[in-house]
Image (cartoon, rainbow, N blue to C red; front, side):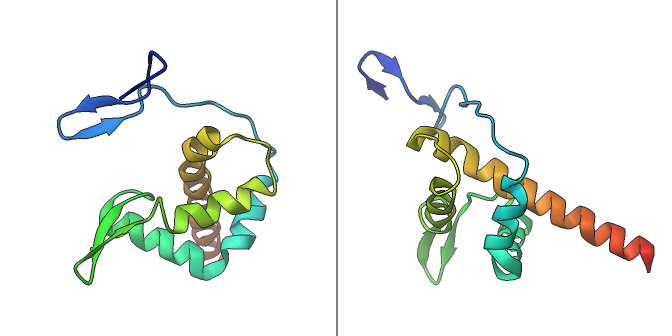
Length: 118
């Protein structure tokens, strides 16, 4: 895909990928804020998606209809992030998955620590 002479996506087999990822900095407090906003239900949803489909932003079939996590739950996460960071749309698209993964890792570490303490 070409816009203004820039290659935005590169075709690989039957899919398009972005050739490079935007790197942005964020406050360390953003991860706990996102975890609190997601709550147990949101964290559980994303954990299930990763376990069943291998990635946070999967597209899977739900009652014979495609369920694009990036466009549904991902949009909600990006809207939350808009209130806490000054990133543009491309940066939000590039970073929301990484931040949700960090929340999942953080929750997994807490659960492991709790199990060891028991």
